[in-house]
Image 1: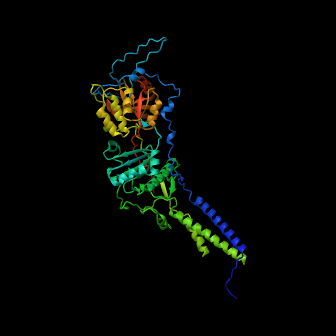
Image 2: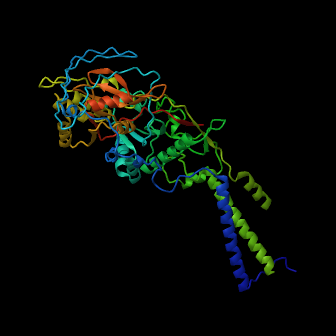
Length: 346
Length: 194
């Protein structure tokens, strides 16, 4: 007696086999989707190419106010149209103290003589302003669109970076929705305000931040990516993390969100001093602190970027492993179905 | 074999070593919001006619904050003496410079200028023009207007809001703001990952 089983399937068996295979694949796909939802709850960025930035158009232009009936102070029309030419050069510095009364020597303003048909109130001569010290002064909070600042020197990389924001569609669209500034080493504002934060030897630098100065993403010369698409992706990731940090409730351990990511900010010190050379990444490409996991090489194989940076992908290494293993489950389920059909056919 | 595969699935599926993101404390915000550095403040000067050039000195302070150094240099080189609103706006039109203005003493215009961190120039004090640099609040929440007088560029002057709005109307109620993005705020690191 032979130990081998010869299987001969009728056409109906083939149909059943095809049906079972299709059902198994669908079941495997459903399991795969559920597994992704359950195991990877980290919010993904919307597939929309545009960053979900605050809607700047919500700021109502001043012109819209002009048609509204408002109780505004009565304007001194004579003062409106007179020539402003106050001259006290050099001027005596007023002695300002709290509370203060400051005397400003000024010419006598002749009141406007009006002969109306009805009595009108004369325009009052304005009293002198009283500057005061403001104890505990702090800025009135402003909420406004985000800011992108480029700090550029004459290097080719700087020119390339500036060109990206004029040619790359995604970066151009982003630029339209933010406040965009460029600073060079000889710019007076840079020298007086930002030189201690972003030193010249870090140039070129791209700085993405909120309107209050909170950084979203900062990249110095050696960590600016090689393509505009990667830069846009970095800005996108930084924005999502920053948004989560600003809006989340901080748990006991202080961590706001947990995400597998690679941060370009590792080279940025708390004082925002960007360093060119980090002992861990002399070539400018810094390793992640995450240990090796199965599938890391798999991602490198699929990653078409020429540099070896562990750029954030929406499918991380562990996620790819998960995808592959769930796929194996589906294949196993199919094999089981085949075996069952064979037994049924027997 | 099947058992081994199941075991492999259980121990490897969903494995990740997460990176935590921690917020960092924010520094005290600078004030006023249009905090033009002192070395960049333009002092008033006498023009060719012997008149004070307060309007153009205020405008220079304003556009320097808007990171328009070339335009500021142009103003300093080519303009001077007294000025009034209509002629100023005509000159800005000739230079192709966009601006917004009010002649009604509307405080919402100042609110918008402060909101956008741009500031503006305005008629302030008799026969004089200064630069509005934003609103500042004290410990009790009262608002003060921060004003840079080009005759006293060493310090900002703070005037209570209600008094400021009332007096501003008396001085003509004119304010003008150039359309351009302001200097970026002082950046700070807001979160870290470890």
